[in-house]
Length: 174
Image 1 (cartoon, one colour):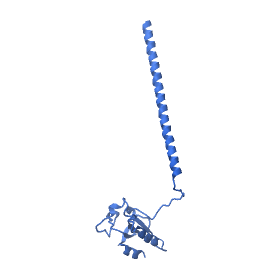
Image 2 (cartoon, helix red, strand yellow):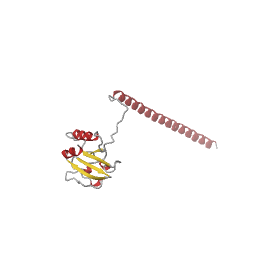
Image 3 (cartoon, helix red, strand yellow):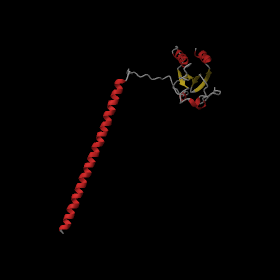
Image 4 (cartoon, helix red, strand yellow):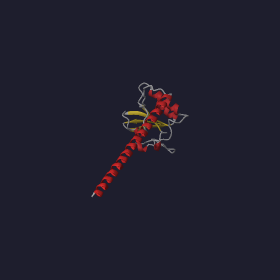
């Protein structure tokens, strides 16, 4: 009987020692995780502080949103009843500024219809650009095929005038 009591005491001592070691390991593991996270936090904080101090851009606080640039898919759904849409590639270094100035000149005219512009060089609009003949009488946006600089007059969500080429567009907007 005494032998059984000794065995039970030994087993209980082993369980207590094992649970103490397990508890210590858990606490050490949690402390290591906390130290690692604090290290990452301090590192990130230091890096963002450095990048802000090295930044040469100045925040003016003003944000300008262009409401005259639309996606091609919006060409027939603008809220105005009658308006022009000028389609050209904004990234065309040779002609982009010329077309933009043409756009601004018309937009700043007194009693001018609203005018919007579409970047046909944008990835969102590429599927409507063609090297072949354009569709001069589209009834839906899905039927649009644009080949170069184009001006469309939209009335009641439909195309009523289709003009291609810089000279013809300049004459139309003059």
